[in-house]
Length: 146
Image 1 (cartoon, rainbow, N blue to C red):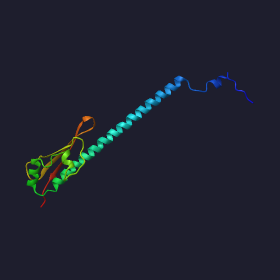
Image 2 (image 1 turned 90 degrees about the vertical axis):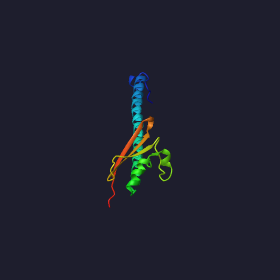
Image 3 (image 1 turned 180 degrees about the vertical axis):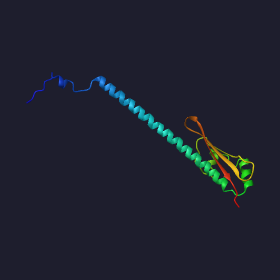
Image 4 (image 1 turned 120 degrees about the vertical axis):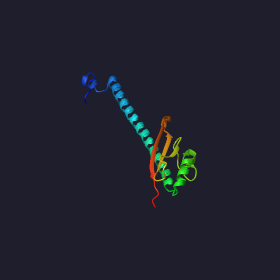
């Protein structure tokens, strides 16, 4: 049977020192903190893009509703009277039934005073994470082809 010599220097140096362990843990914590920060930034970016897509969808929905109107005079009077200026409550109700963004407000304006073509702008504003006000605008020309 072999006896292990407890005074052999090669056998005594087979572990980690406290300094090596602390350095390794420090590196691990630094790397994990960076990965965690990257993960949260990706989540926030994804949420912002999802909100932007939804706002564009709402603006497109309103523009399509306006484009479906055939009477130019009704379109002009509807925009001037605020028919397509919507709040969160309006989006939830009939006929829209859309899921609103936090603090969403849709404003529709005319940019041309002539009837052909109508230059229509739909501006969607909402409150993003951290109370930041964001917005997107879509413009379209409406013509009556006969």
